[in-house]
Length: 183
Image: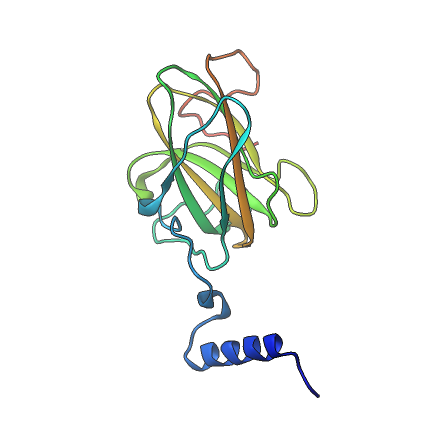
């Protein structure tokens, strides 16, 4: 039986990886922001906008990283850093447009093993790929760590969008800074 060159090449690469003791996942490049210390700084506009995209194939979880902020374990994470404006307000982070099941967590703290959960969401919509979305109140001039992970270590094309409000409103779904919420 004859196979197309691309399939045969992939099978050959897979065989070499297995002989060398590497898993197929290790064959893919790890995203540059796979570790907490390599988080990518993002800015959040007042209107909804895509602030980051990435292919998380090859992503892993690092030692000490929080691996669940919902009922499902997560892995294959990417990290972002966002510093809030000079006033309090509200922010939304979502993964609409992703190609896999995600979990989004927002933390404060300066070390991966000492983070404090501020907000978390898994499965905002019950659709085939289950995007996440979370809304929370932020404190002025605070650095937040955004973790986007694959539920059960799923990977694929990740899209992170965001928008802020300039002044604190009285929405009932808001969360006071420092109060963990799973929605």
